[in-house]
Amino acid sequence: MTLGLDGTSLDSFNYICVLICQGVIQLKSSKGLVVFMGCIMLLNGCSTPDSKSAEPQEKPVPASYEPTTIKLYASESYLNDTEIQNYIKEPLSKKYPHISLEVVRPVKDITLESLVVSGDVPDIFLNWNGGVKDLKTLGLASELDTLIAKQKFDLTSLESVLLDAIRNESEDKKLYAIPYAQNFQLMYYNKDIFDQVGVPYPKDGMTWEQAIDIGKTITAKSNGTYKGLHVTWSEMAFQLSLPFIDPSTQTSAMTGELWKRVFETAYNVWTIPDNTLTTYGDGLFLKDKTLAMWAYKNRNNQMKEPGEAGLRWDVVQFPTFKEKPGVTSQVDAHVAVISPTSKKKEDALRVLEMLTSKESQEMMSLQGRLPAMKTKTIVEEFGSNIPYLKDKNWKGVLSGTTGLPPKRLLPDSYFVKYAVQSFNDYVVGKNDLNTTLRKAGEQMDQAYRGNKRQ
Image (cartoon, helix red, strand yellow):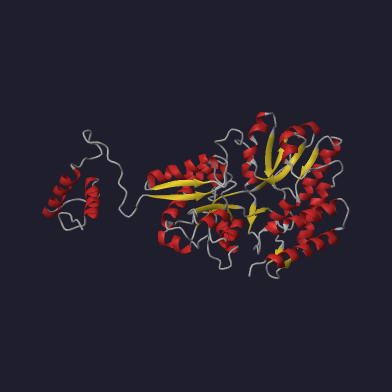
């Protein structure tokens, strides 16, 4: 081992010299002078930041921080290239310059399953809180509490309900993901339709009954030219955190009172006279401009071109059920998980430190993505850097509360097709409500028994 002048290893000696040069260590003894002279010999001089004669020195990386590359797997919907550059890469280059980030995008031949089979598993995966269970099943999600405690990662600035939601879906109540952003539900409305029909604009805090009455009025006054309201049963069920399978009984929850309430309320929208609807409301609202109110999840990334084409729109809070006043959605968090097979977990967590930093979270809000850090300033400034989002009623939309998601015994994808078919049968009069829900429940029970995890 090569030693410095005082018997210190050369790597440590180099680091001490850097600290002397930066003025962090003060020399007050003759021995210190010897060390200082050694530094001069080794570093070929030591200059202050004000020195004009010396070449600028690259900021040193501590010896324990070896250059490394972290692989991040994420679809564009979770973070696009510009967001990754702004919220991760640039902050990394300043605080942790030893870390390089390689982004892996899901394409036809690159899926979670193919990565597991190949053994080429990224260090970090972006997903939503409802997908963490699947990642755990594939062996792609680490328990993070231990690592967080070891590195003193600060969770206190993130919304506690998001963390609770992640723990709630885990059987051991441990944290397997870190939230960095969140989606939300809201109601878009077309100002021109309201103006033409002579109906006041919708307001924050409406119940579904109030929204349906407005929808009926618009459709009737326009003789069916305009559709008053579009919403699906799935957004309502999501709002109320309804499970398809009751985790306590492990049988279908479809015959419960709240499921009845959801199907009845959605039925009252879809059977408004002349309110002929399609499965999705985006075409009616964004392209045809024949839909007055569109209650859905955040689709702000689709609003630019319609606005430029003449759509005058604004937003209000997602209507609510009287059974759960003020609740507009269950938690819909965008999260990051770290792979158990990663040999760079500490640096992977440093990447997430950048993504959840105050600076990145505030920038995220300005650009119209709701961050996991929801302060008064973040809400007030939401979307203000985006011309077509600026000055909309985001304060009202974001004043709603979110509930904890249900504990999912299996992903919703195993059951949703049965709910879709049963609701369609109900709307066209093929089955009454009780028969509709009972049949859907029977199908879901069978699907659960055939696919449940031991």
